[in-house]
Length: 98
Image 1 (cartoon, rainbow, N blue to C red):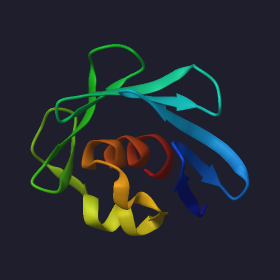
Image 2: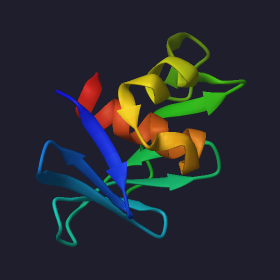
Image 3: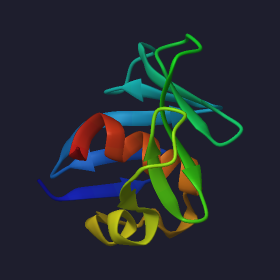
């Protein structure tokens, strides 16, 4: 899987697998919310349960402190991700890469 971020869309080859609008990561080109971002936490759907959080360049599980991945390493996997915030990188990692 080679992911590329271009013009608010996340693509796998030529297929759009997600788009970013506001604080939401949405499925395909539609409006179905996969996860939302608030503060430093990635939350499931439009709810409040935390999937992961970002602190000091580390992606951590849930609201805990155990590191699952480094933001720097995940950014290398996604072409064009330099303009994305660390929390959106974590959301993409949690949804598509993990």
